[in-house]
Image (tube, rainbow, N blue to C red; front, side, top):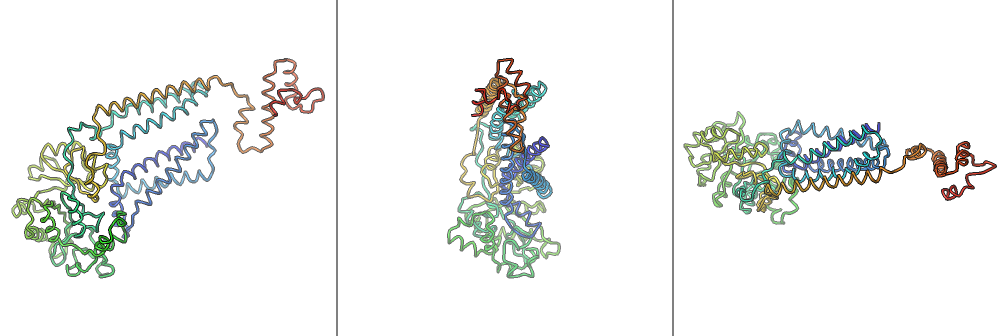
Length: 559
């Protein structure tokens, strides 16, 4: 059973380690995860932080148990896991499996981020894994040296050798765009503000877009909806519950699609107080008093206001459109209304990236200067034939090979939503032209990829790490063989004493006494004394002729 629980401990450790790594990697998309749960539950909360804390606590607990178990093995003791720890281990294992299964059902496409994160962390994970396996060599070498069974020694050695060789050669499979010559690095990716600057102000409000302009971002992204009376405005959700106070002002319309409400009612709503109450990005505390007051008094923003701001600052506008309900009065004419609004604003046509696929020919006729953009990953040749010059895709949909292929066809790629510096760095090394971000104020400070290694330097680090690890492991095996190879064989009493667990103190005392007399017996050179001690069977404490207490060795051991 102890071996079974040790196996369960190893499996749980590996599973929690993988889950922790995954949840750390998706830090870029915590807001998206919260939004998915909001759509499921109708309640907005930052679920990502409790999951992160719970995951870290569970992994720390399992790692501590594993370290203690390895320490027991190192001194040749059984693990003897307490029943409370067995329950904790089982709960952690089941909870992790449930979490992995839930993510697969709710957010299955997010697993792709693991492969992207490896491009940023694989060289460092390799060195860390190498260090861990090298440290384990002390334990493995000890077990190898102590064992008297050749078959066990061979199995341990081969298993350890296979893992070691695999780690030594795994860099052959590592492919990172940041392993490149510095001269081949392309221009820094331009940054689009996702719904403005949503970490600094309520999303899709005029304040949010103004904050983005202050960051000197390349462009802004906005979600366009047509109100019931034909006024284009910007909002992301299909309803107004999350980002406005409609439940207080117009409770009868709270569950209506945002496009089914007149602009006269929409402009009465507060679109900023929710930001201060929920603090979706944990940034409200950094706002100045004036910004805090301004954020709490924002209203829904018209598309015309956004276009005017972009025009004054020569900012590119990426427009996305929400589908309208079938009974919407402007369902068939919303493109015409939006085009009229854009053209009436006077913004230069080359500053507008047009994303909808429907009626592209009509749009080209009315506004030939628009940058036609596709939101679907398609063959590069087909895109060029359709006169589409840009793509707007989720970053998990594109590989480095795709970026090179599209670039060869003179197609520009914009990837969303990129908030972390490490992800921005990987995409920069891959040659991506632009990204959409919630954290434009943070990415604008990234002046160079977090790390960039020429291939020769990476190979040097790789080979040096392997050689150092191999040298240390050889030295550890030699040392352990020399240290443990000449140790005397324990007699039965010593083995019983070392394995005594949960025994009564009287039993342990008796075994200690027998061990003392056993050692004395082995040290006696006189055959007569050996014969006498053997016949007395070590329990002749009160022998009338001679007693063990009279022997000087006995007194020394008893002292």
